[in-house]
Image (cartoon, rainbow, N blue to C red; front, side, top):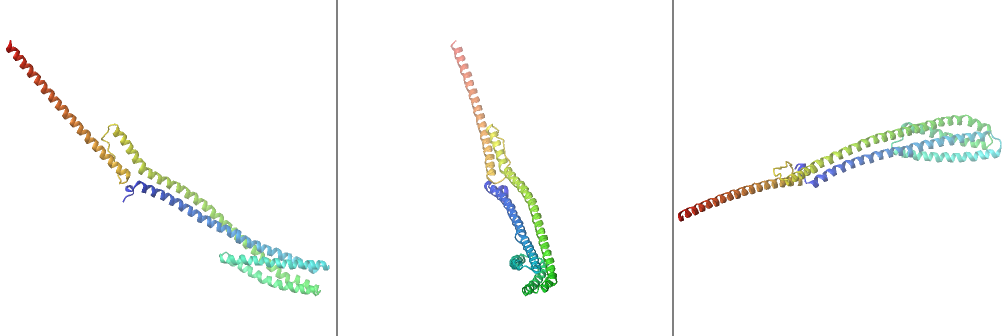
Length: 311
């Protein structure tokens, strides 16, 4: 069955269904793109940046630990030594908390496949150096507690300094890696946003154009034939019975058009029949008038004859 043969309600349902399908497709695409954009933004805010912050905190706290160790080694005041020792213990606890935070973020990053091989190698190197530095720090505490200050200072400025420099470089590189990765993720999010905005604008224009075309198509298939039908009815009302509509289709408008054409045919036939009957009545009246006139003439002639005979 052709589309034009469908019922008007079915045509409207199909037209509005197509428009809804187009709008639903646009909205579905928009939601997917927004989800992707949200995911990339969350990668930056919930993973890359927190890892960079955790590494920065570790770098800061290890630097403060190193500073308090040096101050503890070179001070002679017992109260100052005790204060520096307390600060060092507190900093060791903070560093452990920072490491736990980073380890949690690292596990989540590995699950999401966001943890690069470069960062893995840098963190493994830092972890190894940090373990060695902790051992050297405990040795430093032992020497300092036993009042072997020269050996403690030598250890702190020798092997411990070398290990500290090594993991400081690793920490700096880790911060840079996370910053660069976060920047790349932010650029991807920005590119996704720009492309999504452009595509959504295009989809909006396409949706409007397609909706307008569908509406125009429906109007042309339904309203225009009805207008022709209304005009034809007006012409018939003015006495033009030769009007004939050439609207094809088996919908309501097509059926109404066929009925209209049949009505005009019936009206023409009725008018022709009436005209024929009127013509016949007129001819009969003329014949009757001629017969009456002939009778009158005959009667007049008869009267004249009788009058002549009487005379």
